[in-house]
Length: 435
Ligand SMILES: Nc1nc2c(ncn2[C@@H]2O[C@H](COP(=O)(O)OP(=O)(O)OP(=O)(O)O)[C@@H](O)[C@H]2O)c(=O)[nH]1
Image: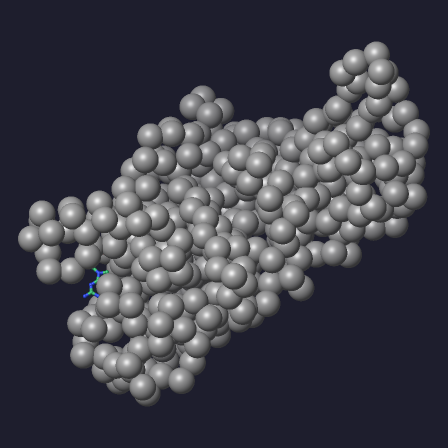
C-alpha cells in the first residue's frame, strides 16, 4: 500500500514534504450518504472553488428544476474527470484554509469500491465516515470503520448527515452516536468524533448550525483544522526503503551515487550510522538531498536522496535502517488481509506481493479466520475470503521481506497482493508481527 502514494504526482509529494501542516483524510460511506455534497460544501464554504465552477453548478441545478444548488455536481464532475485516467481509482482533491492544507481521498461509496476506499485510507491521517441520519449505521458503515481501524487511521469522524431530513432531532443523533460508540469500543480507534451535519444546508460543516443548538461539539471544519496529527508519525524507527539508485548523469558528477525513496519512519541525519538490508553492510550517511539542495534531516513522508560514505552494493527493494533498530528479514508473514476481488482467496493460492519497494511471490499457507464486520466475530470455519472480506492469513514469500508490525509502521507493515495473470491488485495486507 505504501506505493499507492505514487498516485500523487511528484510535485504534490514535494509540496507535502515541505509543508508539514497538512491533513490527509479519506471519505467513506454508502452510496448516496452525501459524500460528494459534503466535499462540495467544504470547498464552497472554505472558498476553495472558483466562481465560474459555482456558476456552472448553479445553472445546471436550475436547468434540472432544483430549488437548491446541487453541490454534488461539483464533486461528481471532478470525480468523473479523474476517472478518465484509468490507473487512478481514488480521486484526490486539494483545498486549503488559512490554518491548514488538506488532501481528500474521495472514494465512491458502492460496496464494490471497498478496494478504492482501502487505497485512499491507507495513507490518511483521518477517516470520515458518513451515515444518513434516516438510516443510521449500515453494514457498509461498520465495514468502513473496521477497515479504518485495521489501517490504523488514527482519527475517525462519524458525520451523521442529512440532519435536516430528521428535523434536526437530537434523539436521532444520540441513538446513532451511542450505537457507534458502542461498536467502536471493540475497534482500535484512538480518537473518535461524532458530528451531526447537513451537507446540503451547510449545518455544522463550516458554519455552526442554528438548528442544532443542542450540539456543543466542534463543526466538521473546525475539527479538521485542529485535529493534532504531527505526533502520529513514527519519528523513532528509521526506515528508508530504496526506490531507485541515482547514478551520475554527467562527467561533472561522476562520483555521485545516491539512493532515492520516501522516508517511511524515523529521522535521518548526515553522520548517522546505518545498515543496509538484507546485506547487513553498514556505513554512515554522507548527505541527504532534496531535489537540488542538501538538507540536514529527513523524516516521513519526505522524498529524498540519501548518500552513503561507503560504496556499497545497494539496489531497489533494499532498506536503510539504524544499526541497532532494524527489522528482521522474514519469509513467513502473518497479516490481516482485506480481499478485494470476486474470485476468493484460498489456501495454496500463489500471488505476487509488493512490500514497500520490494516485489516477490507469496503462497497462501493458511486462512486462520474471517472477521464478521457486523459482530466482529472471528469465524474460524472459513476456508476462503470473498470480495471485501477481511481475515487473518499466513503467507510464505519467495524472498525475505523486511517487515515491521503494521502497528509500528504503516509503510513497512503493509503490502499489496497482485494477481500475477492480470496485474490487478487483489488484496491489501496489514502485518501482525515481523515473523
Ligand atoms: N436533504 C439533504 N440531502 C442531502 C444531504 N447531503 C446529500 N444530500 C442528497 O443526497 C443525495 C446523494 O448525495 P451525494 O453527495 O451524491 O452522495 P454520495 O455519497 O457522494 O454518493 P456517491 O458519490 O454515489 O458515493 C443527493 O441528492 C444530495 O442532494 C443533506 O445533508 N440533506
